[in-house]
Image (cartoon, rainbow, N blue to C red; front, side):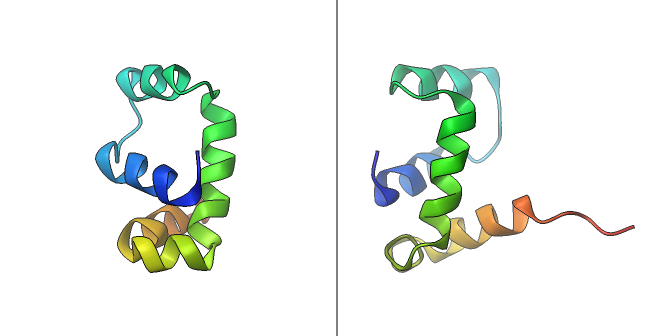
Length: 67
């Protein structure tokens, strides 16, 4: 999957669920690998230009919560 496809997929499936895991596996990826690639896609210029809101949500979600 390319950056644009990953962000479109994440936009369609914003919450983690068993159904989302199945959809990830149906695309030939493990959930861990999908999230690694999604993180790179969110950091990329191409990804941010394509869907800035989803890209920034992915970036915010991986930051640790203080307190």
